[in-house]
Image (cartoon, rainbow, N blue to C red; front, side, top):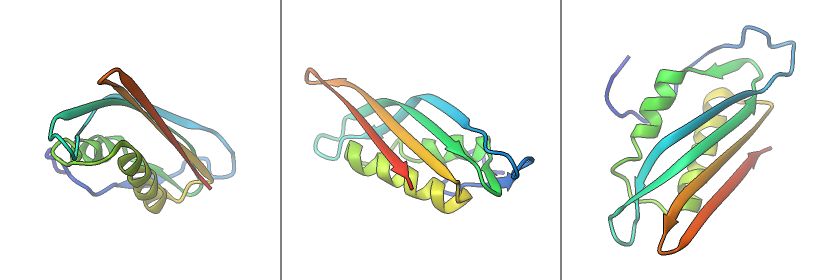
Amino acid sequence: MSTQPNTSLESFPNPNPERDYEIRFECPEFTCLCPKTGQPDFATLRIAYVPDQRCVELKSLKLYLWSFRDKGAFHEAVTNQILDDLVAAVQPRSMTVEGDFYVRGGIGTVIEVQHP
């Protein structure tokens, strides 16, 4: 597996697909770039999902999130893209992604997107 930023998400078989249970990740070091200024935007990402047949592999998630570090993206767009990419990779029963973006210019932003 790569140790460089990567847009591919890997998964593994859910060890208990017969049971509903929630997996939660907190990623306090998410960074992307402001598409207007090119300055870094920092956020804590919170991901919660109920897996179906597949679970996301954590190292691939880390490298995937790292791939946004040099990309310009509005908060709304990047949070929705992360949800879309994770849903495509593991097809969960349900998933929520929250982007809690740090204060810039006196305004903090929280974006929450859900599947289904």
